[in-house]
Structures are given as C-alpha cells and as structure tokens.
Length: 155
Image (tube, rainbow, N blue to C red):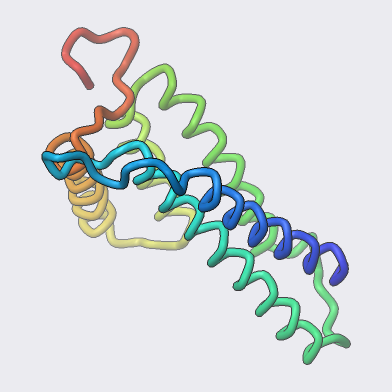
C-alpha cells in the first residue's frame, strides 16, 4: 500500500508541475484585473503539488506507525463512504438543480452526519456558506455558478 501511496504522491506532484509548465505562456490576469486563462490552472497546479507533498508526508507518518491495523468496517469509515456518496450525489444534483438548491441540501446533510446537533448552527452555517460562495463567484470572480434547469429565476 505504501508503494502506491508514494506513486500517487509522485503522480500528483508531477501532474501539478506539468500543468504549471503547460500554462507558463498564459496570462494570469487581464488588463482589468479579471482572472485570465492561467488563473485556475495555476491554482489547480498548486493544489496538486500540495496534495502530492501531503501524500508523501502521510507515507512517512505511516512508516512510523506501521504495526497499527485499520478496520474498514468501522462506523467512522462507513460514515466517510456515506459522505463520499453524498458528495457524488451533490455533483449530480448540482448539474440539474443548480448550486443554491443542491448546496442547501448538501451542507446540512454533511453537518448532521458529522454530528452537529445545534439546528440554529446548521441553518446559519448553511446560509452563510451558500451566500459567501455565491457572492464570491458572482461578484469577485465574475464567474457564474450552475443554475437550475427547471427555473427561470436563476437559482
């Protein structure tokens, strides 16, 4: 397993460096300060590089804890699988129902699965997260979020 983890980290690092190399001639920002064609590839490349380095860190940490066993049928692992399935469902619903509706469903479900019991906190967090993401993408990034196919209101 460690061999594959090292390979995944190496692939992630290499892929990030490849993205940086291939996007080197693109503009980061245009003359108005709007993100250019290199803006998002640069961010993704940095993320891939960071994740590759973190993957190697996990490998080194696991070498120190080599005799520890993992129970893949434990409650926490099953909860992680459920949240992963919920995230896939979120992506599918977002393509059909748009960002706002799918996020208003996904965020509270995830918080409840993570054992948040305060209803007011779940509601307030959902409202603030959806509002912040909407405002950032609409006004700061000037990039529209997915809208609902069934609505002319733009939700």
